[in-house]
Length: 284
Image (cartoon, rainbow, N blue to C red; front, side):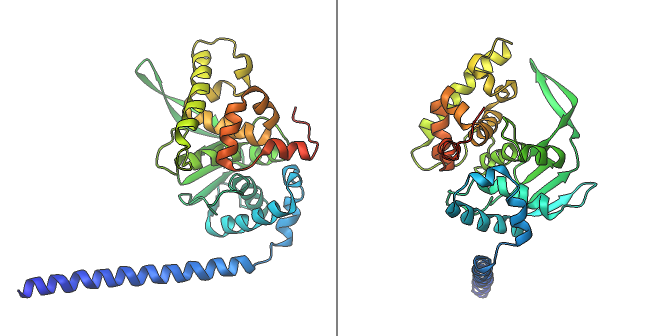
């Protein structure tokens, strides 16, 4: 009898500690978000934003939403420089593209993301590849990498790509992987609104399989050239490459693959084609 009473007391104590901790955390978060909403977007941050061509495509309402999400991102994510100190310019440019991707989504942040490592230039990693069941380790030079919770970026490439409208943007690419990882699996299908999975999966998988078949057979890619051979590596890379095109080359993507464009428009909740068209930007 004494044992049962003691056990109940221990369980109740643990529950009380847990509930108290959750209440404290809720209050801390509430106060944090309340103060953040009052915070004025720093002038030196704004000066960096105004140098980014993409920022100039946005309307004032979107800019304000973006600025808030950027402040939250910069305040809650850890930036670590490798052989280089992380400047506020780096934080602003990285946060801009990461938050542009979720500017119209319900979420305010990348919940699973903790750390961004910034390298000065491209870096070398050991890459495991499989050929007909035979695994080999090779050295690969890369501009970025995402591991679900951690993002690695080459600042040289990230900065250079941030001021042009080309097919490739390493920040968008790696943060697309982070969005893909949010359900715990890197499979090219991020967390979608209920009921959208079948349509999204069918469209994206069909396009990927066509590209993959052409890539593996080393055939002429035709209109699939827009994705490049790398987009045919696997479903996760196809989603990341498609996301780059959606934000950087929306006209080209929509003209060649209107169904892929439509699915990404629904997921990101932004019409980048109209964004460029409105500002009379030539997507070439």
